[in-house]
Image 1 (cartoon, rainbow, N blue to C red):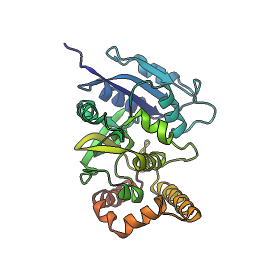
Image 2: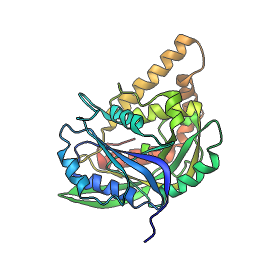
Image 3: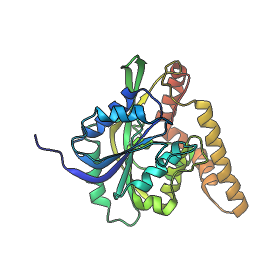
Length: 297
């Protein structure tokens, strides 16, 4: 059997205490790509890495280089989601960087489709990377089994990245981006003082400096579980609280500097009805909130 070709991308996989069944599923979706990455970095935010090491030992990585970074190797002492990502970005040496959380997956042709767009656009000085559409997958965990209960498009309206709309509400998941290293060099990494919404805040900063191409195909699987599940997603109230804090920071900066900035752009986006352009995502969020009792970005 011919080995799939590789592309100059590192995949950062965040994991933090979930059942090993999730990490196994995420890694298999990387290994099963029609175009493989250069290597995988597992960012383990657990204090005891032995469970992850045991799981990794059971997976056939088809010769792909693997690095396992745990709290005992650069992620100590009080690590969080952003610190783990920034550590992985610092360790990666490839031109392109992708992120896949341990409870999400990619379609088998995700990297192949993205690679084609990256090659076509990489000569542009303002090119920052590629974003794809996403499919929401609803599921429950029963023991070591994941049971899918439904699915639907997550953001089918996403066909071009609208910066004003992005400052109103997130439009895509962190797992749907492949980002150029020069973006991180220009705007910095993920904010380590944020308990959540670190990806949305970073995406806004990145989009103010760089152009991102959109592939209007749902090539990412965003897995969601209800609030009574052992692996439930993040609280909607907490997500909203942090989002308000970030927008207030933007507005205070605009006021202090006496100019149009992200805060004013966010308000302008709301006033021109960008909420309607994002209505598919917003309606989806409200609809499943009743089922989940929670929501995620």
